[in-house]
Length: 151
Image (tube, rainbow, N blue to C red; front, side, top):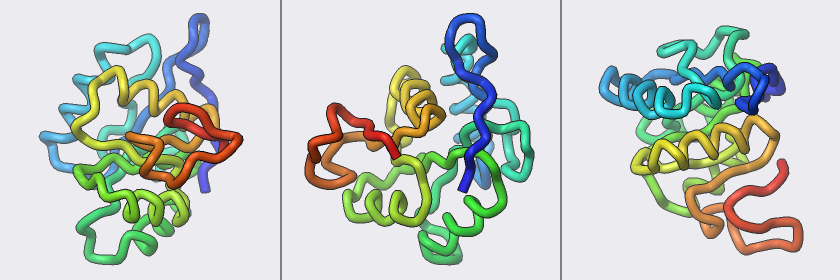
């Protein structure tokens, strides 16, 4: 699973380098446009690949693939040093928990705002697990507040 972390997205540091894997042009260009609104914090640097070492956080949609969710995430996580954030239309809590258990550092809906996307990228980059809502990752625990928790 990915551990690379170079960009920080904080003042005085380069933006977090984001990649998108196996997505349509519509989604890829949409992510690019969303990140451009926060270019000082995160930038799409590898629009369609994940094998590059030049990525800090990788967005992927593990739902609806030819292989099961766990198999897909195993493949993606093994092929990149980046932290993986599942970015999908699916909002099912059980599926989100399966994705995190399979190696994703978080789960975010494609309906999220650009601010929420960048905040999730930053949290995942810091090593936190992220979910669109805290309920997606399970019952609140003593170490969790809000929608992120350390991984």
